[in-house]
Length: 321
Image 1 (cartoon, helix red, strand yellow):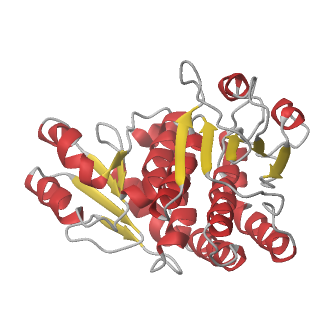
Image 2 (cartoon, one colour):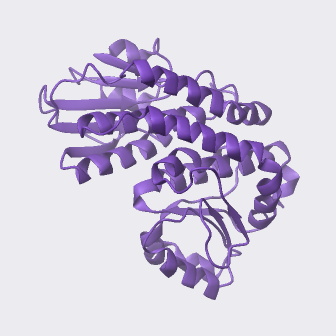
Image 3 (cartoon, one colour):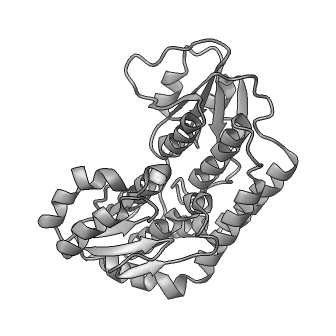
């Protein structure tokens, strides 16, 4: 059983820039996906934050004209394996997720994207891509989530003949370091704005939906605070109702063409808004960081804000009330 430790989780966050730079150095000399053969179809399998990251990669591949999907590994009946031109990527940081192991039990060829190359998942795989996030002593997938996004970006770029992910990862390291170095300027303000409400409600555009889902998970997994992530356009159809009855705290990752629609409702209902990576009207707090004008850097970086607030609340639970 994984042991969760708030102090070690905070230390895991502080180690992010160094881990990213090490990953960038690796990408400079080694293509982790060099073994790939011609691919017609891509199927990502995972649970939790692994699936969150996969959703973003699958959408990008579909936008480029490829057949790609991100599935819950727990899907009843599994999926149809369509031969050697199908790339199956099973994602599990620990390499021990029961649902993911079950999903690939009868798959003749698959790639394991894992932080443990000696895990059960890796042993059963045709090929292994090492997440290379190091040991997460706090027991929470934070660096491994960030590295999963980066390595899936490298996969997308390879399949779509795009640029190397190395430069992106280095910029994300700089952005992450910038946020950590300036915590004293933004963390107290975010803490004050977000605490005392009826849960935390992150929202992000579909292109970065993983940021909303992962941020909500960080509040649930660490300090055990009610939180729910949502896509910004969909928010006006499924979550807006809560603003009428709850002391609503929105954690907004701007960039959706439907930001204004959501903001109109949030302002009308007197909700509290914290924005990350951009300024929005009426926000109680806006957190900016280096390179936040690049949506790909935002994707790899912006969840650090939720992780940092969650770490503080987890270490000192009394601040939640």
